Image (cartoon, rainbow, N blue to C red; front, side, top):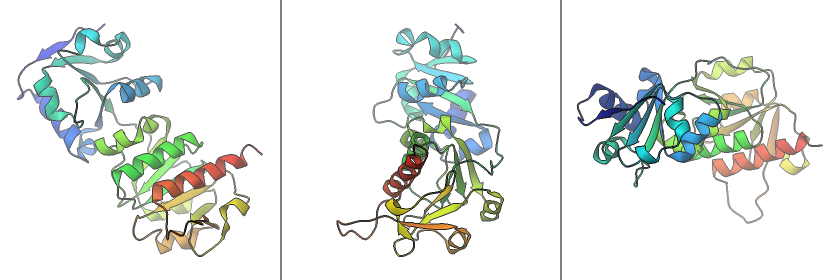
Length: 257
């Protein structure tokens, strides 16, 4: 087990960097690292074979910490509960968190089952879609420019560990979608057949659009297939995360046939 370093000063350079990464939605891009907190996310990261650059514990949590947490990290630090609260994103701080390096592979996989996020704004929606993608076998998620930052603390919390099993690309230009070699499928309230009647291609790339504006016309023009989700309850539209879950689940059924 790596012996911990006890830090008591809030002016410590490592804690200054940690506060920025933990509180600023896009600071991870410059730092090349991101912050996760709590047993669920930390365990999920280790389960996927990730090695924390730094593991952070509170003084209270450290004696109770799982051995795999401390043994897996390159560096362990212990801070007071007060210092931990300064960079915690939770109402009740968990007492343990990891600093992890961003994945290095940013190449689009043209033949992968893919989810395209077209300017999806809400962090909760993005995280929920990532969870659905991981659950239903879509291993690549491409976030076009204007989509919420994928590795921001809020999206990471909403993703509940899904990030670690996905190939994620963000800030992608729309033109890159021309390199995909799988059919692009778009949901529409007025075009296409009912989703339950479609023989969906597998693999494919589902597009999930902006909460208010929907899918942009440029992606509509690139689509090979349109699908409609029946809503007998009479509502005008589904939340984008709910729509994504329905669409990705429908695709997963094709692979079982």
